[in-house]
Amino acid sequence: MKFVEPPSCSSLSSIVFIGKNRRGQWIAQEQNGLYGGLFVSRAEAIKYALFENGQHPETIVELPREIELEMGKNPGASQRAA
Image (cartoon, rainbow, N blue to C red; front, side):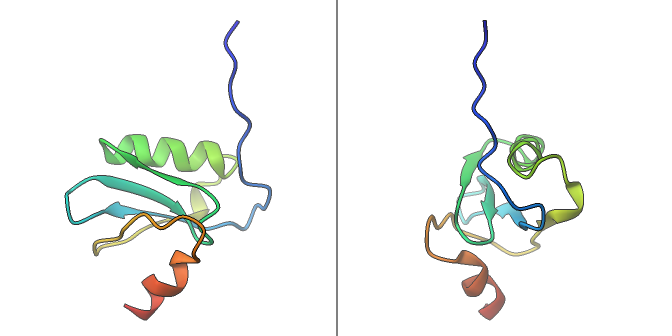
């Protein structure tokens, strides 16, 4: 039997940012820092984002500039200010 963690996201309107950090690693980050992670490929970052946001591709935003993984801080605010 395989156990799978339930998605962390409870809101359908939760935005997930994906992009690369300065080291070239892919990041998926929920807008409020509720969940996120580092990934070896864009495909894996998107797969994770879809799992966490309940399979809503319309809420995934790929950023053209570098982003850093910031958990629990409201990373969306720092990304908008940049």
